[in-house]
Image (tube, rainbow, N blue to C red; front, side):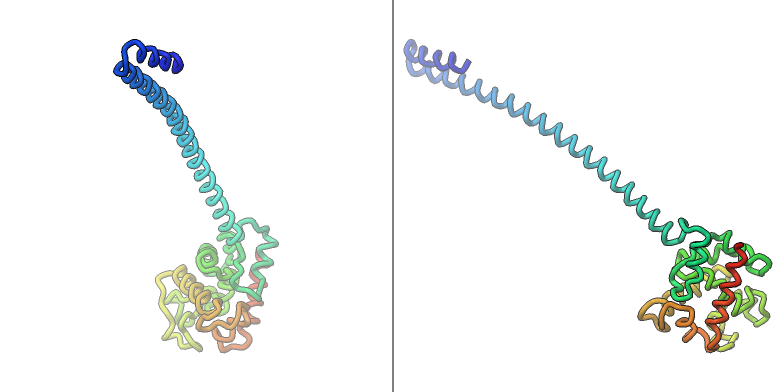
Length: 240
């Protein structure tokens, strides 16, 4: 068509002069512009469709990444709390006297099996919570309550204070011991303090991660660590 229009432009010039040529030339230019605009529109619509598809693909990928991140987080939590460990593995972790920050992964029900016949029977969940919230070996915490306050049965003046760990009662000074609203609060407070001050490098009483290391600042009794470890060994036998 363009050749035809050019021919028309030449013919018009010959027949009607320069004025007709300008008219025909403008028509040719207008037709070319309209053609270019049409082509641009097609390209624009194609690009818009591609961008839309890319946006939808990106959204889908973001959704998949979010699901993967959530899945990874769940796995990390389960591994940290020992949910994937067998009973034998849990016992092995629980009896790691060299690192009290290694949690056992015992369930509240498994902790309760160790507490059958004791005043704390049915309170296994507070030791499970302490492991998850403060990363302190729950079996060690139970043994601590056994040694310090007979699992809540000792008549030392701390029973009414719901103080299972002699928290604040330095060298038997029970009048200085803390009073708690519940057993859960006592174990939560004790485990938080143990993790922060005794089991974290730079902590006020940090000497290492083992039961013997905690013994140095926690109790004046040199046999304290040995007694705690013996109680821990006795408790896990109740799982069989």
